[in-house]
Amino acid sequence: MLTEVLALDLPGSGNTADFGFLAGPGTSGRLTRVDPLVGQVAGPLDLERQAADLLEDRPDRPEVVLAYCAGATFAVHLAERAGARAVLVDPYPITTGVIHFELTKLCRTLACDPPGYDEFAAGGLGQWEMVLNKARDGLVEQYGSDETASEMVDGLLDRYRSWLRFLTACSAARPADPDQVLVIAGKPLSGLDTLLAKPAEATVRHVDAATGPLGSPQVQALLSAAIDAAAA
Image (tube, rainbow, N blue to C red; front, side):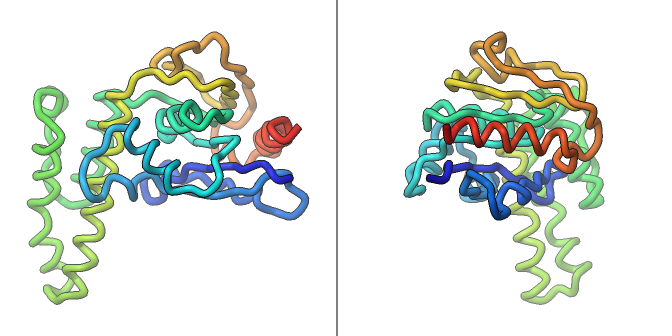
């Protein structure tokens, strides 16, 4: 019987996670990929609500939850609620500094002025969504001022707002307490105490894969072994 594996992906955010190698023939898991930003399009959700909604919509509960980088916070909350193992590759906590950095990147993409750190830290999510929204008309004009341009720009801004909402929800989340956690670290590891209620109980495997870790044979072997272990 195949192990139900849920992999979090964040396409277009710089945290894209290609777990596709786990879906090949001969694997012991049934891989489903989920984009958590979709749940934030309609409006901001805290992670507890988002995790509950996602699992409620799934016919089979995951036994393993996979995440890369910024997906780690949501992954441990999903794993806790589902009673699943969490497997995290290069996880890091979402801080005010991380969100400011990401907002600055979005503003540069949209050719609008990003706030300084102190201004950002003193503001709120709605204020920074408005900064992005103000770029809309200029972008629509840039891309032709027709219905197709409007739809494209609105879709892009939906994505950007969802990314900010997701990061903000992660930064406000409590440390989670999944039953089992495997951390695969190719970079210096920090912040597990903000992700996990019991960070000392996590199994940590350090690997030589500082860049492109999901393409590393060592990392792929550890991920495959974690899924095999869940099936045992």
